Length: 368
Image (cartoon, rainbow, N blue to C red; front, side, top):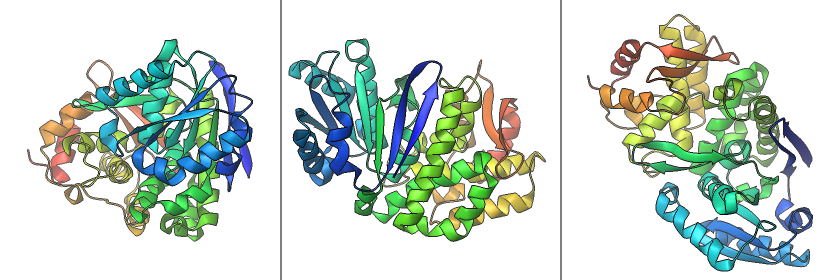
């Protein structure tokens, strides 16, 4: 078990605790933060699987709790579900001394975190991520958001948690596809700034993509270390934090086009595809080598993740380009992409030529 600190000039320090058996310890760890009541926000599936253990742990520590559930799936990151959660918090009568606990994957973490950010202009919340993707990415850093038909995560706020408890044991309940989806974000961290970590993921660590607990624990720890360092330096994505979006500008556009249908394309699958596209675009511009592209594609494919646009469906280049132009990183309508000089050497590219991206998308198989 390890506690990784997250600290920055603009927010209160907190810890991301990674280990096994943490759900049983949650009450003792939350109790010092909970001066009043707690409300657990979860989805219906996770609440049935892990809600009783969390509730029992809180009760044993003298912490009272109530549970609010939403439907499982990306569709719950919506105005309708946000309003519903906020209304339940008001009905329960939470005040500023109370704590929201997000028990679930990235959807629940984003939704509950945004509700906590908005409720009475901000109350404390704790992240208890139950998916690999949430443990290595969305639970750390304070990004909270909902989706709209015009794009993913376009309505949100920065609201840091007070504590994150990443219990490796709960990952054993995940379907294989969700483990692979989370693995995409792990691979992304190596691609951004740690070539040695990527080498481990390509070799001995590859078993993590199939659910090996020891490999998963090491992957979560290193991913959180990377993300916490970046977040501490740039909480609100004014500079270096944008690197964490490698693969997301391409990936989010594709996700939006499939209507956030996780049956067709899970978020991690979109990120994996987007990372491959970002490296291929980089190579097309002479920024990285074809050998690097081949390595990235091989590692992504070995994890059972998509590498080519056609694996996600049929798309129009103009529509994807328009969605990319509406991405949060765009400035003044100009494209901003996260590209790479090589594995572990990502960088922020601003003012990217839209005509070149359109030509690239057509070369990738999108219609003109």
